[in-house]
Image (cartoon, rainbow, N blue to C red):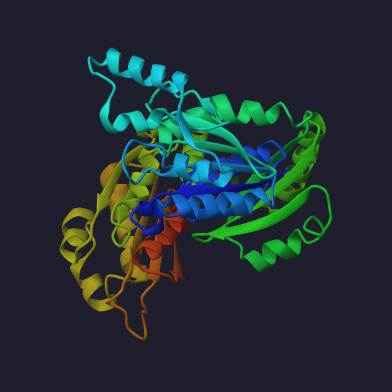
Length: 413
């Protein structure tokens, strides 16, 4: 079965809001063994919605749409479905009863523009919405089965899980498509590809591919079949990937670098302190997103100015004068200073030039020094990251967290 996903809303087309629904829906459909062939983002325009539905109805078996089911004039999805089907909109008794019950529970009266939400294309069926006024729609256009859901994230997710996916799963004959993702950091995509070349051969089962973001490389392993067989295939390939890539693997699935660091800190009972300049608290922010990190993260200092580095971290002023704030000497002093003041077992420090200004031929934008201090001494590393200010800070934070992770792995070994 092949599917097209439609995201409907002027705010999406204009860039005022980001379409995140398509990715969520795609993952859910792929898990059922349904191939998603296209995402389309459409304006709030009934003619455009109808044209997209007719086009998809000639090409695929399934269309899943979100957005445009509200009570205002720009909510035109139901009208677009009716046009694509070539039928009128009619008031649906179940939809009216739902709206009246919703209003009564809140001491209101159903009426006005809200009544447009009781209209349904002739031949369509409603999808219940227990947490909102906009019911979903199930219909047929051409050869495609069409499901339209509200754009409100909580309403969309619940309707997808409780109404759409069970209906689709019933027709899949027990076959599933599952994805297992192994997450890595520290090796370029070409080198990862060389180590996994035989696994990535075209036509092989499972299918293995890579995706790069913020300097991290995810290895996605896909397999379709009976659930038990699929799980075995995925487990075998994940084990092979881990064996070949070694310590550059930091997690699986939705694991983030901070999760790996927090887990190692807990297993080693190791306390951590941070001294951040160019990352501006980004590393601390990521770590405090992990529940339980308060047992191991003692302190985070944002020493952005030279004066703060001297006053808060004890970096000698003459060291900054001689070598500059973005230097190996200063980043080492930062790491040692925050470790001394906090009493942490491990301290990491970052200083750099995030841009867009401030660079020079000797120290271009993206130059970042990272240092780690612990009982075994202090180590430092220089990296030159590319990208805009946000991307450079993200990559520097990832690099610093990975330095802590690798140091804790060495201690564990």
